[in-house]
Length: 441
Image 1 (tube, one colour):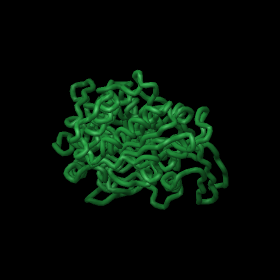
Image 2 (cartoon, helix red, strand yellow; image 1 turned 30 degrees about the horizontal axis):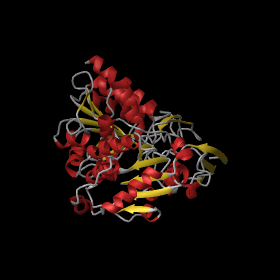
Image 3 (cartoon, rainbow, N blue to C red; image 1 turned 180 degrees about the vertical axis):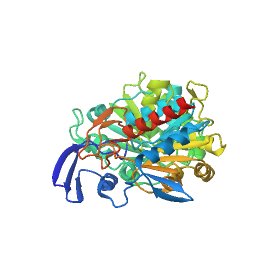
Image 4 (cartoon, rainbow, N blue to C red; image 1 turned 90 degrees about the vertical axis):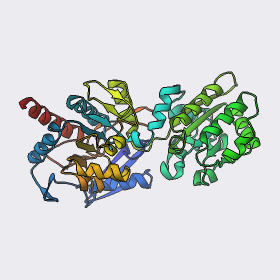
């Protein structure tokens, strides 16, 4: 690998999709600038010794290296012979690859799901209930003088959010950066983000809904029932202080994490947060926007593509020939728990490592095709293992940033394989094989 320096590379780790990364390739090493620790770790996969480089099929419980055509034929056979396959389009790949997976799921009458089903799925459902009063990150940078982090610790989960999008950037109306902004953190724990905040609302776990209701009550000029103090662990006077800070803001930005959508109340918490924002924007002399801190680089992309094509953001069931959507029934964890699928394709996600034990166990019992770049629980449980291509490093495509802005990325090196140029290419080759088998049958 010859020496070269590439600037303005897009990072494919978290929803921040930072596009200002500088990469220096020299011999068999890589040096990265501007990336956080998580981003740097991802970039090292390009030269990692653990990289999956050979197509493999499991025979007698052990992986055997085979040709690309043999592995592709076996993968197509598994999917074509399945009566109800699960296609899990992970977030570590491009919208273009996910789109092929959606069309393949429709063709096979299977179920297509993605990472949102086990992370910000409740947020998507809350948005369906109440709408989304939001903006791009650029608007927040230029206008926001109050940032609220609700149920998230971005200093650990999205290290560059506060420095790039939230707290420290100098915008048109926030020229002094941090000195022109205040920060509120709502979190049961005293996190690093909470320590860096002007006000920490340390509520009781699973009391987000009650706290949001109380804030909405105060905003409407009334005093909540005193029992809310016992439920949330927050004094009404502190709630009033928070509301005063929100009303004093010229433009506020609320960033919700998994803590808001995963606690008791689920999507109703998000619905209430959205209603709070709409009320703040209605005759209260301030403006607010709200957005989710998406954990994976393109988890928002699948929601956008699936909604554009079929009307639903995740958990799409094509058993009747058209898309149906019923989280709790057509979402991957529930399908696996109830043993409602008989084969699986997992692209760019560690589904075995991130689902409950009973779901993960059944996933490893059914025929599974995995497309991935490195060893892990899911590749280990697969029957067919196809090498993945690293998006934004080795091929071009599109990610959707956490604020649902599409970001086009270009590679700084080529695919290490001569049999596929991208995950999209792999999915297209596989889909063609599946169609060929189905038409013969």
